[in-house]
Image (cartoon, rainbow, N blue to C red; front, side):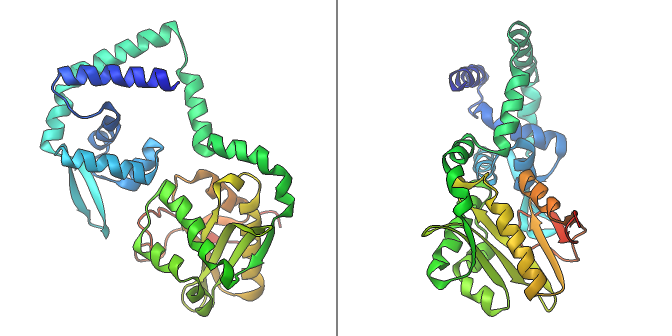
Length: 302
């Protein structure tokens, strides 16, 4: 599959070079989205493309350097930047219309003779939900899943709180200033009345989550992460249920969370234990990446 992909991208890039286009063909998906959708942020582009925030951010920087894309301040949140096609980018898109028609015809010709795209689309969708390495590790680690215990915060495990969260933030998004502040000072969460839980296997910490106290009567479920090699074994659910149990017995008020719509499996997990989608309270989110707000309403099975 990699050989075929590289051959097809290479063919398109060769045609682009003949048209005096130096940009890689892999960057044009962003330009198509900006052409059709107007001004969009990195999070929206990443969600539409099914790629990580970090990858799209890197490609966008290349497009900005080539001056085919321009940046705008987000009128709703001054921490975010929006992208749009520049006049130069719009002119390039118009010039390449005949080339894209030829690319489409060549692709349709191959598909008619050798249909493959539907199967590849299904495989791609499955791997976007769970990577191939996660699927392998699930089989390798099944025997250990029953030995995992959920424990409260201990100072000796404090560095694992940051390590586990950085693993997934750097894979899917980027580390924001608020992340660095919270992850570097886990003890501060406890002093403010919050809670941190760990999933432990033997002497290893393989998962974590936190309840951050926000004001007098609100708690945020946050910083939930399971190391990739132990995902798919139900450890995230066990952490989530333990956090809800801690909230029910030791806290009061409202329990909420913020996440990104690209994390579909996590959202389904939250829904399954009683979180419902709700309108965000007035004011910006703590996180640039957040576009989903949910509130705990109790187990849907009660």
